[in-house]
Length: 445
Ligand code: EPU
Image (tube, rainbow, N blue to C red; front, side):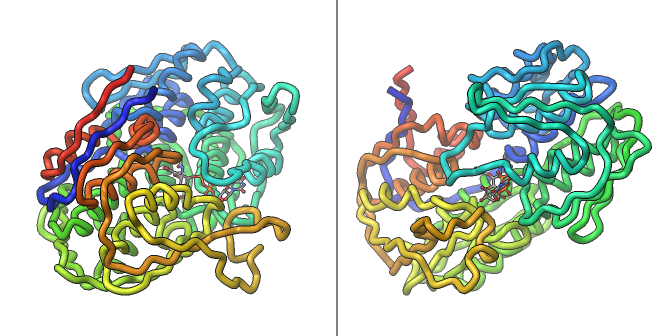
């Protein structure tokens, strides 16, 4: 049996949070560090399940990677010995396919399993593989072994236009281009997520020559990467949204310390539209305070700078406490409403439906199949009274939102399978306690 949280909900959440480093930057910069000529030190690396799995995976390949202090990680890819990612680790962390870059640069060829990760939609990597091939890399998939076999005969160069943007796809192509000395790579219709810019910034400080021009990324390959001082990765915008949504849904207030508001600009706009208070204070501090009554606000998810898909489960919880009807339309992933069934166990009334869309194959960012029945939107009319219950987590962000819902609900709840939540949230239990929430981890292992 997996560990669980025991939660007594209904308390007003009030206090301050120091956000952790971003999971979705940490995993990429750890992988990038394997390309360096010398060991590199990363700061702000969160102690979370996905980081631990990637450390295990890299160690299994012979790499040397260890925390030297809390949240400070030393990465040394010079000792990599194997070019085949272990199926067990590969199935646990989706970004294992980013290892194509360091393994191809060290060994010229490598084997990587079809990625694992959260159960949100089909999550194919077809565009990413096409991108690799456009840069001259040979990639063959074996359905017998479940492995991709990639070969780099010549250093990558050329042009690839993502038919629809891909966050980690953009990052992989950057990693494959940075060390392609004397060659240029142009990535068009690239994703715009701030974690990608953090990766570019890190690589450029180490000697990389990568620039973003609108939706294009242009990389001029360099001979080597080296950084003599530690690099602090950006803070986790997803974690921040989770705690802010919790504070507002419980009609409380929260300060977010040392966090730049431009990472969550569109979220703050939506918060203002609800009538709740959002203020920028001095010293990079943000302040949010709930009104006793606030308005329902509809939205659709989009890649950055749009309203992020990872935030929509939190918005759904917030909307259960708002006045009026909100519609949330998910455009980035298919099947990202697994939490709705669980929320119903807490008494939430939420309708799943498929809105009319004129050109769905263009409108959605996943690979739309006309023969599939989709339910890409939910309708919530608030305010609703939530009660306690026993709920199960199916994906990471939804998992944190279910814990939030239990903290909003009156009474006692058990949240099962919290390992999924702990893949992405550092110190969740203690942070909730510090905000006045009643939560206790039940350990079964
Ligand atoms: N897609 C394809 N083919 C591809 C690539 C993507 O069909 O080759 C589809 C995806 O299935 C999805 C859409 O395109 O429907 C966008 O996917 P994208 O590649 O942009 O997402 P990702 O890189 O797999 C990252 C984050 C997600 C976050 C999204 C959107 C990491 C490790 N993951 O996923 O974060 O939701 O970008 O910003 O960076 C999370 O942290 O819990 C999480 C899921």
